Length: 271
Ligand SMILES: NC(=O)c1ccc[n+]([C@@H]2O[C@H](COP(=O)([O-])OP(=O)(O)OC[C@H]3O[C@@H](n4cnc5c(N)ncnc54)[C@H](O)[C@@H]3O)[C@@H](O)[C@H]2O)c1
Image (cartoon, rainbow, N blue to C red):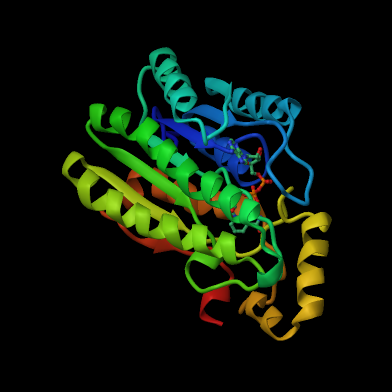
């Protein structure tokens, strides 16, 4: 049986674990080769443990177990030159690029008056400039291939609003606008650009350490905590759930969908 993204090559940032790994494995199961990029090292200012080279190796093993080729690179998405070099090299090795999943991100929850200038800067550097860098490194190859799909992982925080995370919410609205702006120009090359807006997921980011930081902010000002409540009766979703949306946007099934938001968010953004 032919896979839903058979023969395509997908670049995924933040691929060592969590959402990025789930995307890499799901796309590989449906026939895509993968370029797996991750910094695999200390993330600036976060409360949770950072990903490791072993995590990225596990993603590589998973893609290979699905019978697909994979090129992995340990790169910080804040470094455009390094990202371009890694992507260019991977395209030489895998032959083409059809899909870009700009997924790498960080989240540092704090009550608004406890956000430092460093937290704001680091969040925007990774979540906004990092996404721009990823698209700038990948899109020329999509144009060269005659078309493709860019999937930007935003958040429910980029559709509605989530409290206790002013920098993160700012960054996730920013990339939603960025995606539409890229879509307007890249349409001429049959390149589609869409955003995905998950609710809370069980990943390294959403770990107990981050929940504790959120809890501190909630204790100071409890009322807005209800903004996290999902409409469907589920508290946390799995990255594998969101990977189904990414797969749809990566595949030709969504060939006329561009400049849009898709929210596998359990209804939180309408609740
Ligand atoms: N977990 C959630 O509840 C949730 C909800 C909505 C949206 N998201 C978004 O989903 C995406 C993935 O998050 P996750 O939950 O899988 O988190 P995660 O921390 O488990 O995984 C993120 C990966 O990105 C990598 N990364 C971070 N900064 C990087 C950088 N500068 N350069 C290269 N790699 C970098 C990390 O090393 C890590 O492997 C993020 O954009 C996040 O904002 C997460």
